[in-house]
Image (tube, rainbow, N blue to C red; front, top):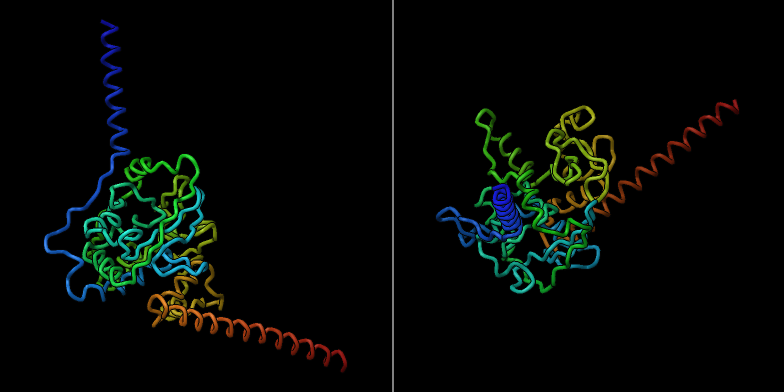
Length: 329
């Protein structure tokens, strides 16, 4: 009797183990779209251009430092788990997303799944994009499909063990992934809810400005509180209303920072935030048009820095001469 019980228990455990393996590694492709929603609707690409710009699609999917093509990917993103390389999201049919259906594209942003159903790594911030509306996601797809197709093979990620095992992400999602769509707070006004949608979903501010735990999940108890080593290993500041964050900033100071990269203390944005501001610069557009705007923006920033340094030198000379004059008298 005891032997029979052990055999039954072993079979049950084996079945449970097999089921767990299927659950972890079985690809789940596609997404059930609401009726009447499509990326083929007229004029939707214009809204998609705006959304793609504020979502920062180009910032990651463009290896500009190595003369890459816009949206063709290839940029290296270093992390504690290894190096991720961003994929080609141009409409090229072989190396990009040209063959992706609307369902495939929405599944990537809503479920963190590739077109073949494999898990995507959350280095791609689908953990925030998942809160977007399906209509806005498809508007971005419509815009991307208006861009020139670029034939460029995707580069494999270079990750440490065991993080290169994509099946483990199924368990990670169970613990940390919430793909519920953004719901406006009926107690707040339209301006607040629009801002909340942009911050939490489209612009995914928390992906850089929120510290992470050992498994790379955002610590939501410290949402937007900054991190010593989040974005590519660099310090990311606190942007909560706390006095150590941006609580003392006026609305005009906040606008100035997002438009010019200059904060109220006349310090300049650095690293990835500088890139975000460059790509958000008015009139930047995408592709070839971006280069001229970026160059002009950097030139202006360089002139501001030179003028600031010159002011410090002249002030120091004035103080030195004043001290010398007093000593001489």
